[in-house]
Length: 433
Image 1 (cartoon, rainbow, N blue to C red):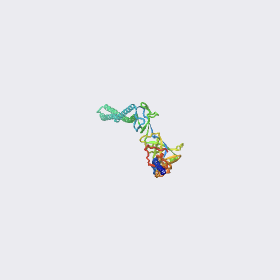
Image 2: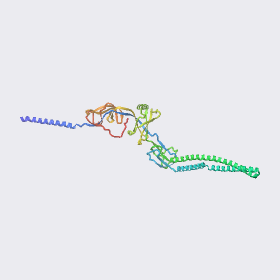
Image 3: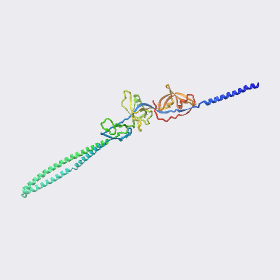
Image 4: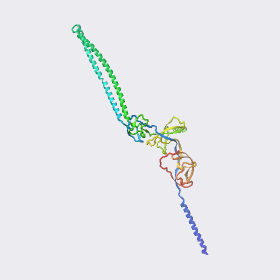
């Protein structure tokens, strides 16, 4: 009977021990099955001062595009540029047939030499010197004739000399007097003629100098050069083609790319706000940013150069024109983009990355990490976008830790393991506002 009583008690002891062991194993398995806290990347909010921008649709254009045309007629012998290359002012672009223009230069120079020789001959006054010498000889003969008359007159009176000799001397005197007058008239005429020839020769030299310069210019124009620096377009006249200054078609075009011009439009109210902003800052030019069509931001800051002189009555907008440095020539005329104009400097703003914000049916929220490293959901209200971040107006405060990466792995109330968020290095993009 004792053995029958002991057996059930032993069974109970063994069964209890088994149950206890089973309970310990279950708790251990449950503990082993619990996942570790999820790792998330967070940013700690800090107040900062940020500029606020307004964006406007814009298009680039070339202010001083130049059509390259020939100034003289001729056939193209060489094209000296690559289409789409950058050229500098003065670079040769086309070479025309130089031979006819070189011949014109040679002829003009020969005519100039001839006129210079004529001027030199007139300046030497050889004919005038000869005429003056003849006049001096005639005056000497006249003097001798007078002396003969004066000598013979008393002799004839005293019958010491024949009357015939006095008559001959008197006739010779009259002849020499007439000869002197003729020589004097000839000298005066030659003086006037020499002066006229000298003036004519000098005028011809001036004219021939102009002809030489014109011929030399035409020879220079036969080498067509870039009038400005910029990027050159396609050649519309090929080698062998005829260049005519009167042709309506240009040879090619050159557009300056640095700086690049941008036009955009403001409404009347926006224009007044821009003027007010300009007056408040006291700056002559508010810095601008240019956002390209692919979303990249042009690295150079721009400035407004001028505005058109009237508002478009159809659209109620006013066009502004700005310039942006473009040293690499990456931006071309005709491209579309957006111009960002600074409208405000926001002080002590809290910003969160856009990827941290969840928008559900117009309600925005973020997940934050509390002091106990557990996830909390916060409803927020956002303002403007600055780069790839939102300005948060309410819902969070400075020092809050906002989850940026790992949102899909957590939910409110779950514990997490945090690490600082590091933005990926990527091409600078501008947000679409």
